[in-house]
Amino acid sequence: MDQQATSHPFAPNRTEVERTSDRELVVTRLFDAPPRLVFRAWSDPELFRRWWVPQGIGLQLLACELDVRTGGGYRLVFAMGEDSMAFHGKYLSVAPDERIVWTNEEEEDGAVTTVTFEDRGGQTLLTFHEIYPTSEGLEEAMKGSAAGLPTQLDQLAELLPTIAG
Amino acid sequence: MVQYALPSLDLSFAALADATRRGVIEQLGRADASISSLADRFQMTLTGMKKHIAVLERAGLVVTEKVGRVRTCRLERGALAAEADWIAAHRRLFEARFDALDRIILELKQEEDDGPASD
Image: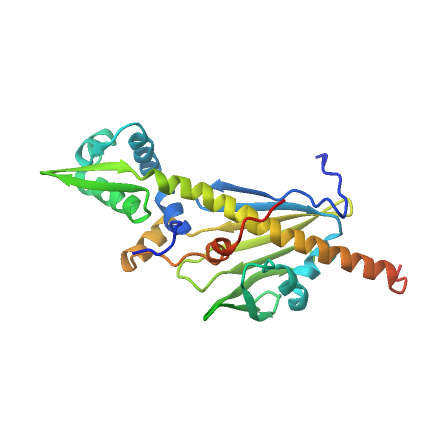
């Protein structure tokens, strides 16, 4: 597998986003650093909070608690004007420098997210994979509620201005 | 009432996770149709088709209208456009995130290079 990407600090690699099935979203990106550094930026709360919430979208991260190990949990609290919202879940599986799997429990039938860090000759191929529940489970949930809560990403994405670039 | 411009993603995903419902969407993309004609076409009971249509309606993908005794279904085209918008919004979000992550990783690399030689 030849990577065509020539990486350069001032020319970030392309972020690919696709729906690989009716229930799955996959985002990939190549980073010019070994997996242990990318994993560190993802698992250290002080580093994580610096990039997870894009600048300039009026969102403030009030709390960012990450206990990145199998069985650990996380809690992110955002403030948006008067409102605040919390996102939380558990780490189902953590393999340092390789993989993190977590649940999204702020909504019923939330997605399960897996992020993997693959070494590509000193660079890291990062794959962010989200899978939504089965239609059966969700239909049951839908019978009880008129509309599912929008996902965390929906809420964030709606706040994003058009980012040039 | 949903107060969001985009349909809830998981509702749409669930609605489209079923082959019959995808077929119904495809069919309605060609022409509006009554629930009974859709039931005939997909060889299922009227009750079964009504359930499928209800799921598609809740996801905002289909609109139904009763005229006399016939309930007609049509595609809510805006919803499919919203799916595309949703993907585009995700791309913007992750690009912004990963550009920031790139900068942090570069810092970490430089710290390592400048720090005491460890290897």
